[in-house]
Image 1: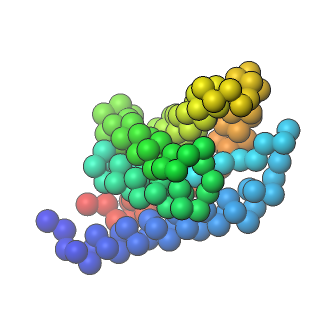
Image 2: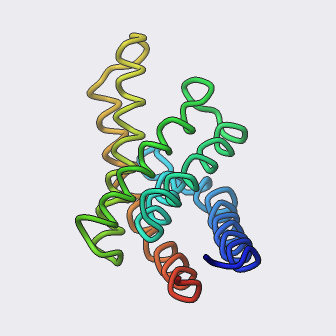
Image 3: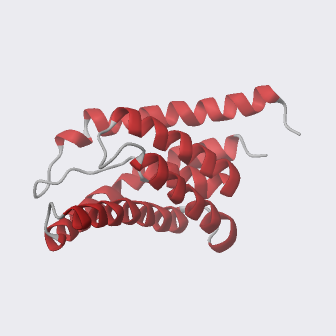
Length: 168
């Protein structure tokens, strides 16, 4: 059993790193627009942590991050990011534990999966509400995924360093 101070320190460092990357989204990425689409870093963050920390701890982190995103970001409905990020955390945790060892390939896989899940959920919601055309939404989703995935370059090394220094 790990000491409580170790666990608190580890997750505090994860929280500070996530806060710094969220600041990157807010201060830099929200001002970048490519074909009228901005990068969306938030789904990558819980996916990366879950791939390193595994199913239990990663899904808890993802659930908390989804809840915080629901408080701070406008989603299609209340609780959207909580539900979607929890799903991303479970799947990324399983991929990191059972399928791929955490690293660049796993990070790319779970990040693309996280972005795809968020965008697919948005497309389905808007499709059922009849608000937007699904082909247009698919184009926007593809552009968002392609312009967000390069953000692995600053994100993955941060979480890898935290995981390796605070490894159990």
